[in-house]
Image (cartoon, rainbow, N blue to C red; front, side, top):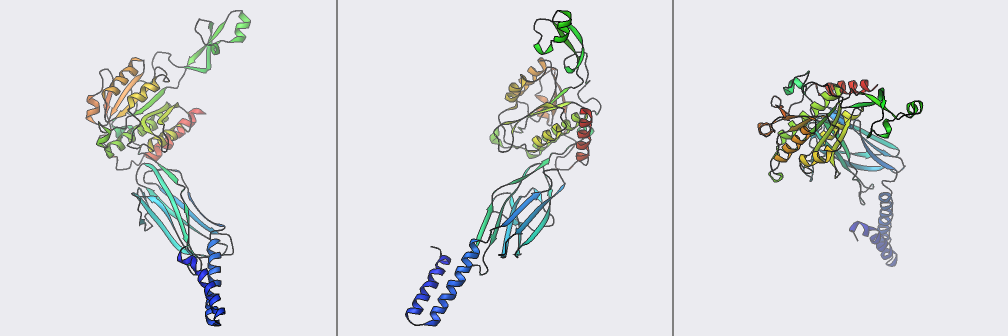
Length: 421
């Protein structure tokens, strides 16, 4: 039994001894201890009843350099006050709080925002802390802890909140000129003479049924009128597919570690291409040999022109970590069966192993347009013959923000949404 829990027994013992020995002073001391101990014990037991501490990020997504406000609210909705309190909330070192003095934590990379005070009955305290995102990533907010005690401080209590909030910080986005790519046709001509894609919403006419035509192509009303099976002919679609594929490996072997600046350069180049493609009204997709946080599944987003697609792509790139889910070549083999022929495929990499080079050649042979954006010379040297490759990312430093990041994102999102309407 803890010593503080023995107070009640000590008080009861003194009361008993005082009455037995006819010593009113001893009995009185025991009675005071018994009363104060009982009140303190009751106070401590109900200390956090109807007391809530909540935290809320005003934004769940941000760009590097943005300030995001973290709101903290402590409310006591009962007559019993908190004579004193101390709370703390964990934030990662990558989230800078310029107005706050933070304390160190036992967990690597985690720091504490701390506040102390007293909370009366039916009182509330609230704070707002500006957090500045210094780098791309999936940044943790929490856990949090609230301490308090009774008036005498005899029976302290602790309330833990292990739930975590997260802030997604998008990668830096650069213009094509800043990447060293031509702004008008970075990947050659967009339109060719082949009618590769068809738009099922735009009917160009009818023709006689041919063996192998899918049932959904048959026009049953025209078939009934003419007495022979008639198939619809669709107009070519104006939508083109652009698949951004990212090899996040920066070293030949996983046990060698990774190059931080090289990885950030790869992610920034991929994000910049996705933003440009969405603004150019491509149907954008993403494939990377990484994994989503707290999930055992690779990063894969099928091409889409949804208004939310660009946000999803940037979120997926934001959460990329150095740990891989295998090699990109294996992911490409799994994805190749779902890929429509004639897609534009942009591979961003600083390393191109032989397996990836072979997968790229197969994609080209299947009728796709494959382009390689190499963030290092060793990647360009490994590109198979017949595949276009460009050096990219050598002219910018991933540790410095691009002032056009947010405006480029909003411009591309607005263009994509307007195209949908």
